[in-house]
Amino acid sequence: MGIKESLFKKLGGAKDMTEGSPSKRLIEFSIPLLIGNFAQQLYSTVDSVIVGKYVGDGALAAIGASGALVFLLMVLFIGISMGAGILVSQYYGAKDKEMLSKTIGNAIILNAIISILIMIAGSLYIRPFLELLGTPHQILDMAVSYTMISCLGIMGTSYYNILSGLLRGMGDSVMPLIYLIVCTVVNIILDIIFVGPLGMGVAGAAYATIISQIISAILCYLRMLKMKDVLTLDRQAFKLDGTLSRHLIKLGLPVGITQALFAIAAIFVQNLTNTFGTVFIAASTVVMRVDGFAMLPNFTFGTAMTTFVGQNVGAMKIDRVRKGTRDGLKIGVTTSVVLVGLILIFGKFLMGLFTNTEEVIEVSYEMMCILGIGYIGVAINQILSGTIRGAGDTMTPMWVALATTTVIRLPIAYGMAYLTRSEALPTGEPRSIYYSLVISWVMGAIITAVIYKIGRWAKRARIGGKIVDISNM
Image 1 (cartoon, rainbow, N blue to C red):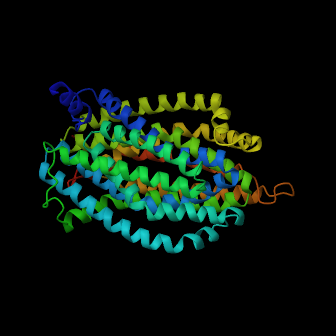
Image 2: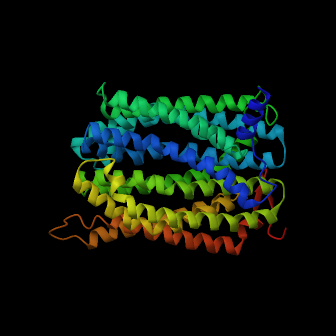
Image 3: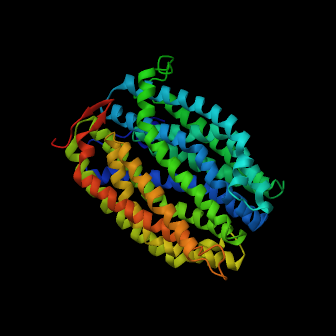
């Protein structure tokens, strides 16, 4: 029994990333995180696969048409999760148990407040919003149903995202992975039952996802209660602290705004996508699902860098920050190159998992090939942004996202579509959506690299709410 408990603690405990080889620590942290992200991506992907196979391309398009709005509902939670994760990693690196516990407690309370507000507001405006986007009439009711259920169950989904993020902030990427794998299996089983024999359609897929996310959130919280050597979740920890809450929001808000920009851009792009018809909407849904997997290494290494840098900045080991960033870039870019090759080779097979319609498979594969070159740019952007955020500067990545999303991507997408209108393509060239995305990714990488090199972020690092110059340390 002692050996079993020791192994469990070694696998699932918080990880100190302030010692040892930076590349080794990043890989150790990233592998379970990557597998966990892969499992989480299965939530939405399984929905699409099962709905596409059991119900048809119309239902598949309905899930795709609602995706941008569901993501928009989640952006505030993503911001709080990131802000809390940065503070958690810094306080863990500084070995400050009291502030670590209070940060987690306040993040949990803030999440509950925001969840209730979004459940109320979101449920009132879903249909008008989807109508405003020009969602095709034949899939509108299904899209409303899927989004409404997702909105009402958003508390479970948001709590999993925040609690697993807090565990990762302490360096524990293994236990969230184990819980997520269990719940992914539950999601798959429920998807098959609800959509198949029970014939619940897209509503069944939404219910399956929500139930699975709630289970994940409960398991993550129970895990935190057992980490008494690291934190104490008592009544004092859950006492709302105005100063700490404002600091959480101040750190997380730029991240939330960044994600909101992506969501709003996705909504505008969805509006443009809707003009190209149901086949292209279905193809875009398939592309975004495969793209979600292709993006996993980039987002994983970005998160790993934020945790690594946060802990080392908290411990004032700045030399490890620079070495870790270099190692992270090597790992991230190499992984992206390999992944792009695999997508080009096996792309059509992947598209065929979602639909039996040959036209949808061909269109989605062509769009996926266009996106391929952009993944290397995303890797560079995510890793350098992760370093900057880990040092407490969440504003700079926000401004980069603002520039690449609103100044570059949207004008190019709409401009290309407008300029390529013809008798054969009355609404313009559908590829414009993906060309604009690749251009924005590459430009984002260039801008972020220049900002990192200039180093202003290091001169205004935030450690526990205080501004510290770490550029010459």
